Image (cartoon, rainbow, N blue to C red; front, side):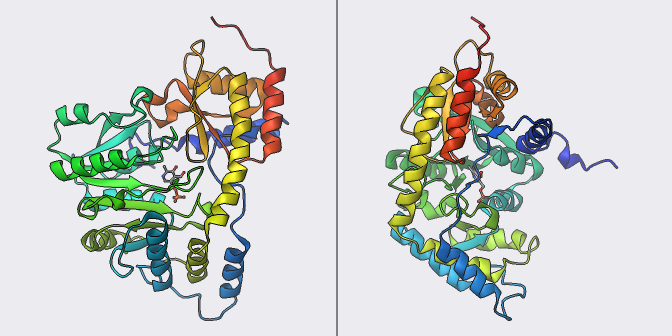
Length: 389
Ligand SMILES: Cc1ncc(COP(=O)(O)O)c(C=O)c1O
């Protein structure tokens, strides 16, 4: 069967292909250590699981739920934004719970893009921005994030581009894959740019609690609600990636526009999941501190691993990965990743999958127990590296 034209040029997600290969290598007895994907390996807080269990046992929670999520969850999101980000959101009109923030990216593109509309996407950046834009008929215009600019957009360069057709701009700090933290000045500049050019800024903010003590929302910039939609998620901050709970926060009008699309796509979320998510959002600083203490220890091991590979990296990264520049003797991150996979049975992500500007980098996930990192280090130590000077 011939697939629709909209799928032309849309490839299977890199990880879905690579996981198949890793599966085959494991079947051959290779016991691959996968340091690729950022799916938290730790469980949610026990109180969160308790709410899910208790609520699921009730007879009246199994029906379809409203398209805008339960008021309990919207109120919890509003409280969470006020407590952590110092942002006021009306729980009735400025918050839309999502089945994970990834679906929100697609909903936004389907809501706003006509054929040929342009969208600024970061290079390197989360590949889903590009595929969602392409699937919805829009056109990606990449903006480069470079190490020498602290992975911030070069606004002078952006100002010189033809921006007339640009309708949306994806921004994401703490940035994935580079781990770059935002500054208040950067966020002010982004909002000013959006306002000046009448571009709707989509800020994707799922990593602000991981290895970062000062979570920042783009909505905290004055006047941001007029030109910003912020996506957020419980996947990483609360170890709930498989539960699929995210949110979209913005002006009432935007929520209503996006609901016109989304309400035709799904029929709400399981109520016990929403109530457990509300519980998760009420967790205090202890929860994040405990989680970050674990990630910090793991990150030390990853630094050790990267030193063995002669990679360069900044220690000031946030999020659940470490981004590192590869030694010049390798053609690109794909070559280094393959060498490590086939010789040491360790998988690390080549930076090139996040865009051409990630070519000379690799990304290592922190989502494995410490022993796995130690084993990965031992395997690298045993390997004799091909000389390629
Ligand atoms: C930058 C970025 N945005 C969004 C997502 C999607 O997260 P969610 O689980 O909320 O769909 C991810 C997941 O890996 C991500 O890395």
